[in-house]
Image (tube, rainbow, N blue to C red):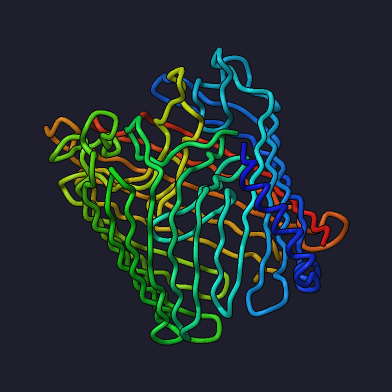
Length: 442
């Protein structure tokens, strides 16, 4: 499927050997990651439940760079998902956990491969290929299921100026976390897609404790988005700090947005202009850390004109009208939680989290946290009245620190969601049990 990218990768690998393989080979890394996951989503209002388990494998090869003024390299990735058990009737058609067969049942397995060519000059790197995983304010690659979401396109990152990082790129396709196919890029509710997502941004470390950010992105025919961010960490003592994190998004319509096939669902909430992007969202988070304790409190406000928007290919279908399985995406807001997003028009969300690192009690590798989010004043999609919703998430993580099974990690997560009003979700309880292990060959 990605013959052009793989051919480019192979050609670059040959070039690397000829141009000076010392750095290319010596700095190479090869690893195999395994993830076993049980996923249980219980719809308390009587809708379809989702109860499945699967095994995922991810093989990553990351080369070094060839010697010389301009260094070249290649990254390659192979992904394989295996369905272990779905339980009779426990795999909803178009599930975001595992791809569906033509009859709506889960596929027994699925796989995909991708590769990136890369070049480095001084402190600037360029990557081009189909295994990109951005983690930026305007785009966050999702890794919340068996296998990660990846993107196709080109990116550039430059650190030529001290304390300043410049990021830019253009992406054309996405490969979903539950799919072996690639799709164009889109938004929730739209059935058409775009092959042009452009972005650019700056991260400037004004002082060792204060970082300022500005990013701009444009998904052609869907939306334009500006982001401003500021992060400050005040060190009170050696094991005590206070962190402030401020974020602001301004999103507007672009091109065909609002027309048939290009309509934004506004996350199931109200929109001043139905199907169009029109949103301003700000959020603030404050975290106090003392030893192993961490207490976070914050608030988020979504304006009344429409819901917050981000890249989401969940409604893109193939030629037979079937979902491509690309559903499931992340975004850069504190309210992107296990079940809900709290991103509909008018929502005022207050949230908090307490976390503890048990290394302070002599149990390194063990961490636990509990979070609560309460959204109010959301505007119903029909414009009449408001809705409210809340979610409680808890998780325990443990990574074995030594011995034969060093690096084996386990994570148990449980979320509870409840809502009132016509634009809230169906009440849900969700449980995830995950085992992770990575073996490094190089």
